[in-house]
View 1 (tube, rainbow, N blue to C red):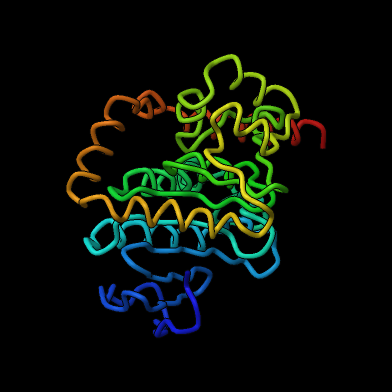
View 2 (cartoon, one colour):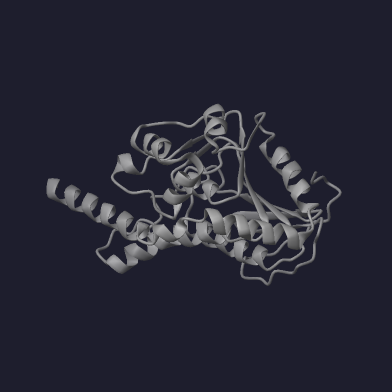
Length: 275
């Protein structure tokens, strides 16, 4: 795997140019680190013990990483994971850029669009993408995992999408991706009940492609990514694009950001009325 023999390189900020070198090396940036080995990029996201909640800064960095990887022809497969025992606990509601308290509707709309841009950037990668899920993948964290091609769950992992029960729709393009994976009835069950999808159920429903022992989701994902990286790169990209063209229903999600914002405004109005 990615052992101590790999040469390490550090970049101080995500704005630094993507060097393209360091195959078998490591490039670091705030909140996100990237390791390269044999045509596979391993992207780790770390909020430092904050349940890997998605802040605006983290979302921008992860989006930037996806754009950079898209242009990197030396990368044939990508693994995304959270650091520690949490994939992601969802958006950081304490971040004013994601949960603005003002009355500017355009500002609130821009906050919702950050998540859509993040998930679309990862879904658009031409390489095979794999989410290595250890622990919870909740809300926006779960939607991000759905944007990748494959998901490997650790045995203690689970997925929850509580948005509808909190008064919102499932935004960020997550709803059509969920329905494509599990079908309409199961999507409704997941969204309208307080269902925690454990690894066994995720595997049965097609939300997980493999289940690994706790702590081994990254290793299993890297194994799969290594197999994909052995496929001739043009064939992999063309075949993935053809499959995605057949399956892509995200074009039907054009209004999901507006629907989410409506839920937010109605919720705020109800809270104000009770005050």
